[in-house]
Length: 431
Ligand SMILES: NC(=O)c1ccc[n+]([C@@H]2O[C@H](COP(=O)([O-])OP(=O)(O)OC[C@H]3O[C@@H](n4cnc5c(N)ncnc54)[C@H](O)[C@@H]3O)[C@@H](O)[C@H]2O)c1
Ligand SMILES: N[C@H](CO)Cc1c[nH]c[nH+]1
Ligand SMILES: [Zn+2]
Image (cartoon, rainbow, N blue to C red; front, side, top):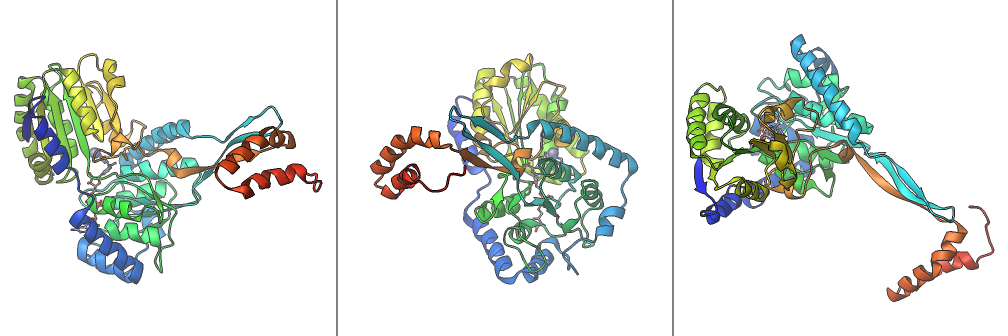
């Protein structure tokens, strides 16, 4: 892992933030754009071709058989654990849901908001390096709680041409039966524009690697997207009370996701740095995923030595990580000073992986510094609102002069008369 000191090495922190971010532009953008164009122009044929090229499998069909979803083998105890995670996520999502509201004015009219579920949503379930049944729950549950009518899922096929069986059964657990075995940018393009087989959706949600995330960015506007939820990130702020073996395992838990996962440790303690480095080496050797994790640590890992906790929090706010762990004494004291982080894990008993699986909040989170302006996936990503305005005659009479003045200032006389004509008209008397 690269090591820097703050505040001395400020420039190196800026370089790290600039150069080690996923670059959602340049060559990546060109490649992904051309995949999207091919899907738009060639439809299903492009999906078969790209699946052969990037997933190494010749598909016979795009849609996944319903019986495969229902009957795929899954360990019963695992199914029970997934049900626990689902229940906790339902609870959390229900308390998040925005409700329609209205407010009366003194003249008998009202204003308000009417909340409506999005009609058709596409879930991206990643599946290149690992299988993500947890991402099925994290995307499907809030959509179900929001009342989305049509939920469709895509996930890349394995070498046998099938989606992962655990993912399949988790989709079934959520009652989702429109599923396609495609992944990557081509799957995002198909959801956004539609093909002969796949009907386009209104919104795409879910995490993925840099190709998936770039594609979501490019199709935004044609459809809505949730956020840029790309390669995983964790930033650990640790003081002298933190356990080096736990810090190392938390860093590795994100590093094993993707060779481009970002992991950062910030501490004022030299001993912690040395011991975490030793632990990383020790624990890496035992991991089946060590190749991916090592590549992430070597190319995108950063250790920042600071003078004190204030400097640690300042640096963390600049990085705006997907996950932030506060493994420090009296951790609750610092929460409000964290301005930018997708999810905050407080204290030594809260490993980030609890949030990955079953704490309740969503694990689909903004990456690449976008936690400065984006929030975790929520049930409210699956609804939209229409404003409601109901004027009585009295309300229109009371506000007419103001309407007229503003309309005239904008040089829009038809606006003024649209309000005036009603007050002058002797016509229809209904409300
Ligand atoms: N931010 C979050 O909330 C969050 C949550 C879970 C997972 N993740 C991230 O999701 C990602 C999962 O990645 P993954 O790769 O395992 O699965 P994935 O499903 O995201 O990507 C696999 C697809 O990538 C495409 N692909 C691979 N190489 C390509 C290339 N050279 N050109 C074009 N397309 C190519 C293929 O079509 C393949 O189907 C990881 O980066 C993980 O960190 C993020
Ligand atoms: N840590 C990931 C978000 O970056 C979510 C996840 C799913 N499965 C395991 N982890
Ligand atoms: Zn994870």
